[in-house]
Length: 439
Image (cartoon, rainbow, N blue to C red):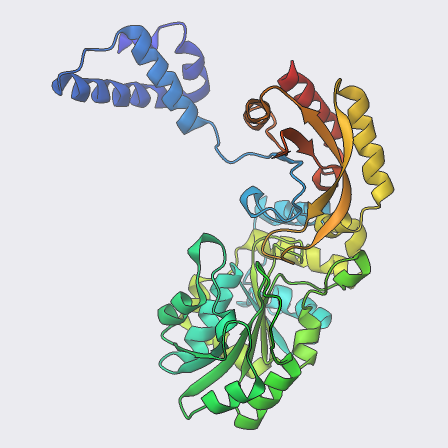
């Protein structure tokens, strides 16, 4: 132990991690003794030192780190979904530096509610009577079903009993909540009469689920939200609309297919609308419930609401993001919308600037995907930096493991980089990383 602690390779680790290095060495020595006991040859000092250094890197270096997203997928689930505006980041940092009035009413000096920090802004933007925010949209769905439908039936079109990322399935969350799924219609065609015929005295709600990550085309039929709302109203049951992406702007203005907007959902008869905070809304991870006050209050009183509540940093970041919409500046301030609305001329200028710095590269036409379980199959035209290498996979690996990591995509043997998804101010880092990896 003393010999290892005083060795030249370990000394820098002691300066960095102090006494933690001793525990790491003990762990490696314990594993070595276990291996010797199984009949393996004892490792020498050099091998033990290598294992200690490797373990130290795993333990001491943060595995979660910033990356440059040049993949051409705007809302990339594996890369953390929506990046935040500088104002949102500043708001989050401000409440994390010290104490805050998270659950304290400054006017009365008494206990307050964290719900109050976001509710007014959400209602102003969506037209809802009330709102509640939890830690993601899956939580919002679980809470809504648990609070409103435990032990009773919820009607869903068979084509909407979907699975989203990570194996999360609507039928599974129904079972977890205690609600019973009643499927109506077929995978590709559902009619108003299907909902009408399925309603019984055990019906707790009708639910519509937006197909956010796939598309059914061809011989299809589905009633409008207004038609489903009329059925729900006639029978006195609430209509829950899970729109998923949290879109507040008209996507058709950018050449994209229409995406359900929260305010339209509520205006067209949904009693509760559920959506994410970190997709097209462009904020931190959150699940937002907006709709009728009576129903939202019922969710807020459920025991799960406390278990699923949002933390103070996310509340601050989400409020700052909502302010961008209230001020009419979302296209300029919210990174997701800045990328979607980015002029093609600006994209081409950046791609050509990169090309001049990278020998042997070229500029190619391509598409940017919206991604993140939003707008399946929808893309925007873009210009890409294309690099052809003897081994594109190896070049991509070197870029992924560099500092900072750079994520591109391989297509037809070329490694491609999309300026649309690279944040302002990252161009110089990207070019330096490309030059280093190629060299």
